[in-house]
Image 1 (cartoon, rainbow, N blue to C red):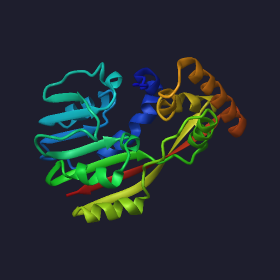
Image 2: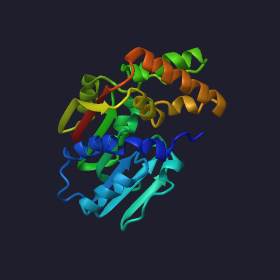
Image 3: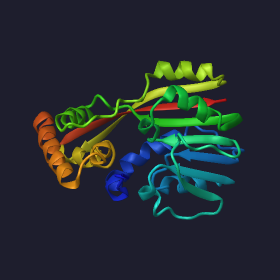
Length: 246
């Protein structure tokens, strides 16, 4: 089941877009010929980046056909509905880019060397992943899911030190790894529920009938407000940034 909903995801478009552009600032685009965006979502930001940098070729891939349904065309820009695990390029890329996507994939110790293999010598890897799994917004979802008889996904994002060692083992020539905290002021804590409905809660929506999921959302919303209070709320969100050159 494809539970992704582009309209729900875009409720916080500005907030979700900022890490994308922060990630692009780590990249040297001069002379870049081919860019791969892994987990491109709706493709809107992929297209903006492609046009802004005047890239000779950009490919965006995503596991959700719903997210890709309304991608806007552009010259030398393509999109494919395929997972990172199944993707295999016919030619290497100058840049492999992934914003808020690889946290949905498992087995990073095996996947990251594979992704590095998609780069030409001297190519650049730029990845951003949410690392907010311990926040109440995520921890409560996992607790409630277990009470509903569901199995939450184990958080696949590794500690920064593990990624550093993994990249060294793969022979990268330079790297930059850091965590950044984004602070999102909300007029009400109930807005956080709308945020996670567009992302983290999709894993549970896949496992339930619509009526049961609606009940889950009511319980989640009620318990979240009970824990953090109603009214204005500062939603803090940690993200892991990783840059490397092979």
